[in-house]
Amino acid sequence: MAMEVNEASVCVRLAMKDESPLILELIQQLAEFERLTHMCEATQSGIESTLFNFPPFEGPTVFFLEINPTSPTNPSPSSENPKDRFENIVQNLSFNPPVNDPDAQNFISKSGGTVVGFVLFFRNYSTFLTKPGFYIEDLFVRKPYRRRGLGTILLKAVASQATKLGFSRVEWSVLDWNVNAIKFYEDMGAHLLQEWRICRLTCKALEAFGV
Image (cartoon, rainbow, N blue to C red; front, side, top):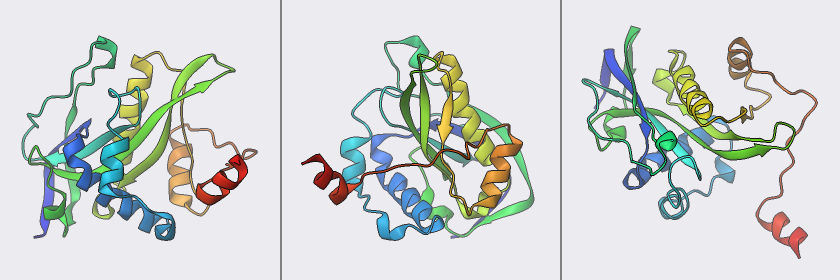
């Protein structure tokens, strides 16, 4: 059932293990957008067994961005370290023109909202700065909601948590053909490192090299 959105409460919150089917669906849509479906081997069981083995911000962490008719009531998971606690980020937005979401019913969350995007990130470390940081592996907003400022909200949530933890930086990669994303990142003040290229050993190549 399609949904038209004019005004909504927009929330960034931690994703839960029992929401793995939603994470998988978003990953698959991201792979399609990036023209990399032939490389996507993600499964629900794989997500459940690997993404939720550590407290938030100590291992891979997923933020959902969802819209709600009212503010969400589900609490964020607690942590023994007060700095690691994450309070839901909620703000009211107006969409002009309204958003028409034909797949809204497939993205209803456990809190009753509609998930419209996600960001997955994990800790890394800078030897030059001698401080940890966050690396963003995936950042994705579903098609009907793009160019509405929602990607910025997700990025700011990660940056805010990095600052709260005393981390030094947040990093991510962008495909060279995605000129819209590149301009978006440059406009927000991100520095694109033209002199660097990603090197990656994966699956069979990794196994062969490690012998």
